Length: 93
Image 1: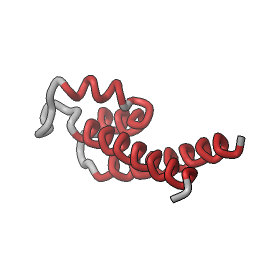
Image 2: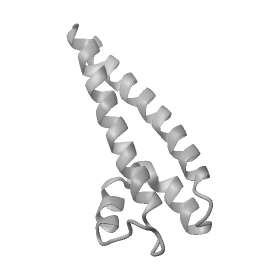
Image 3: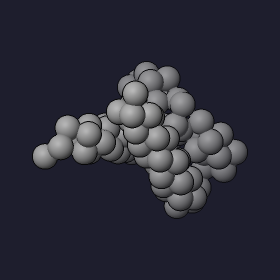
């Protein structure tokens, strides 16, 4: 496999995992959520760049959760495009 394609695939998996962690954190951030705990504060700080919009929405309206999935899907697509753009720029130099 070409090194450029391999870099893009690895970056896509990293972005996907990072976004999934952020999504799980936002879905667990309220005190009434099943997986709420002290870890949510640290993971919120770690993933804050991608969960900021979902975070704000969740504090404005705690239920339902499906808009958070929609917001995070849009953020995932934008982040994948941005990551791909950066990798292409680095590889062209």
